[in-house]
Image 1: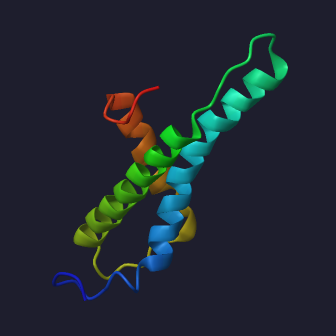
Image 2: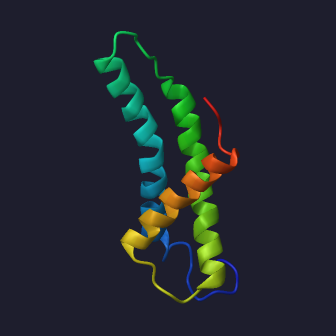
Length: 104
């Protein structure tokens, strides 16, 4: 069990995966956007997948922090899959808007 809360990380693993899913959506949207732009425009846009892999690692760690914050506030509450997805998406989008996330 992590910390003094009644819920361990093992119990929250699925929640963490849903948060990662929300973060993953925020990663995939720019990649897909670049692909669509390159596929339907006259100029070829390149996508650096290594850079997005590093961003995915950054985002997975961010999801772990989001889960830890949630568990610190609500140690005994269940988190729904959609709430976890929105937490992941919202947190990553917020980091990007604040300029904390890696830039292109």
